[in-house]
Length: 181
Image (tube, rainbow, N blue to C red; front, side):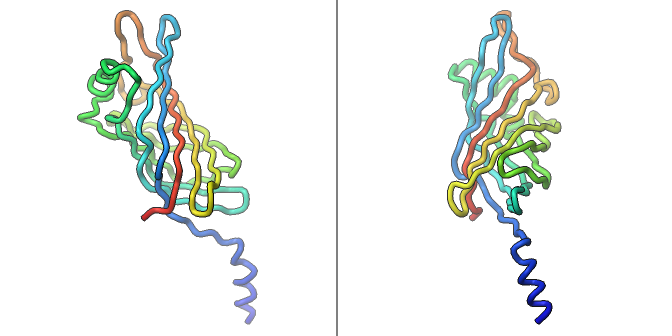
């Protein structure tokens, strides 16, 4: 009886991780070019993968890995898309980028996260901001953003007709997480 009372008291404090996966969303990236501060914006398919997710109080614990298909990247100009994917990101050789998220806690109100980004055959730590909100039971909305430096991933700085793209690129994603099948 005593064990039952202890377990009953502690039960609400326990959390179990649920494996979730992206169901819908988008990926965006932004870079500037100089001279002239030309803005280059692109999109890509939402990530795929699995996230282990649990909640405890005002904290969320996450871990997992997300893949992004390089061939899905678009900037709105087909020749630039071709150069981006074929020459600079070498999509045929490196078809995916992978974000590995080690187990970590973030505030339910949003907070800092870190992970390792495998892009263009190199692995480099990234840090950014993430926000998770509940859509309905079993479904979450995730917004995250982080900067990357092209040189960290051995990616040549794109240049064309005297214009060169910044080494710094901002990545943003928003997607829905649902229970994995």
